[in-house]
Image 1: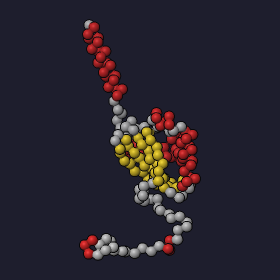
Image 2: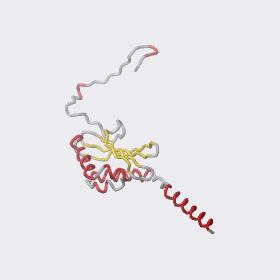
Image 3: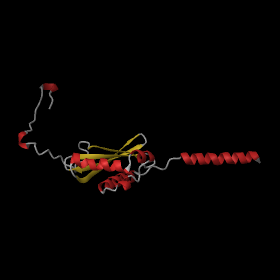
Image 4: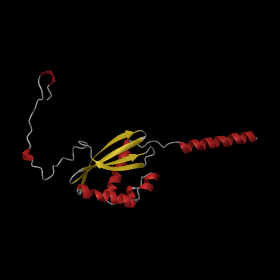
Length: 166
């Protein structure tokens, strides 16, 4: 009887251990993108508490609401006023899903890089210059001091024969 009880207890412990270590089913890409867009939209609305809603424990510890507010509100001083969300693209690295939300500001485009862990929680948040050509809906506007008529485009060939470079 004691052996049966021991076996049952060991089986229950094994099932509990397996349940505790089991990973949640990864979120579909559309849901991960929706979460990233929700974060950016909450930043735009200055709802920093809602923006932190999907942060994992580490992010909650290292990026308090006041710091998130400070970072987001410092962007217009560097890039001009926020204009629009230009697009979304994604990538994967190891077990992480990375969503890039391209935001157009008056003077620059910024990629808000949102990194999701396998449980669908936000494990990283970065603001970086947008990747060149990442989103064609955000046109390049040269600075006001550029004199467009000072430039001329010509076809040039360097060298000749088999090794000529166009």
